[in-house]
Image (cartoon, rainbow, N blue to C red; front, side, top):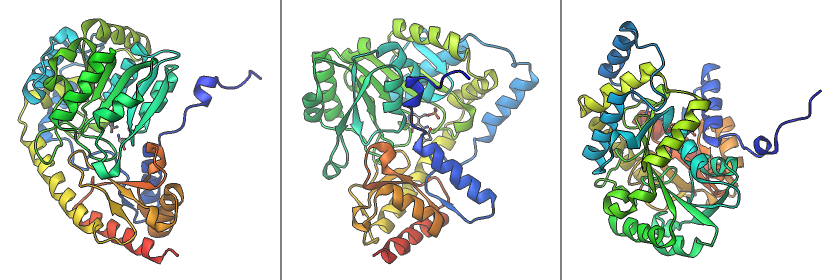
Length: 390
Ligand code: PMP
Ligand code: GLU
């Protein structure tokens, strides 16, 4: 019998978000009326014209490999979309298409981080960031944001977390799990620290198109001098309701993007050709569905904030300004997040993600990726359940 797993993989935790979503889906399949406030994907269907493009691609024989980092016309469309929607200027050679934004992040971290490197990440952080950093041999360093600041990272917090080992700063605005959006002044101030200290910046902008109170700016758009040391991560998953198609983008200095391409050569090759054709249609087609979805998420956000405001034992520090999550302070319930999430699912049939996965054991993430009526029933159940707790 060969000896066991590597130390590297033994240390990896399962994804808290994927785990609870799978459990909720499984309970639903067993006929339980679970309300899913745990989901991390739009409940909307992929727009019909995008599906049609994929069907046409299959029928037209787009069933073979493409270049590893994507079809040339898709890279061009990604560069055009970055210009149009984020005000960022990249050549197609500075763009790689990946199997989801997750792979873009993974590749970027593998290319830039090694043993001894510290990577700053605002906390609460998205579940996969620390694991990806550890898999690269680096050390994740949490920069705790304050609920009183609406979980918005400040430049002072970044400056005081820097050491001689800091190599990279991970940003995520709009943020998962808080919905926090950084304003231009803050992004500039943070960017100046990165310039001064010579840090890589990996900016995960996957929720950029889902911003409710004005556009979410990219750090690179407000401080173009950062271009030689910044990588932007985006994709079609959230904006176009295409999570299952697995198409993400990485953009940045050509040398780094090419290095990520070499990794991809040996790991996964090209992303699905059919999905690339669908992504091309998404980026170049009618953008009405994206705007309609963002409007609907904003409506739900408003309803959620109002309803949560009436739950006695639960607090929301600030209305989420983007993405589709709210991060609730559950310290008033007397339970920690893991215990609350487990009992909520078993006893009240509501799925939500414990904050422990994001580094906060006294918070719970709820998402508004479900029909409003159901969302309100879910929140009513949360209110009743927490009220009953001693
Ligand atoms: N970054 C963040 C902050 C996310 O929430 C997600 C959602 N899964 C991703 C990246 C990965 O996106 P994708 O599904 O395109 O891999
Ligand atoms: N990003 C989503 C979430 O945070 C999807 C799940 C995942 O990829 O972790 O729920």
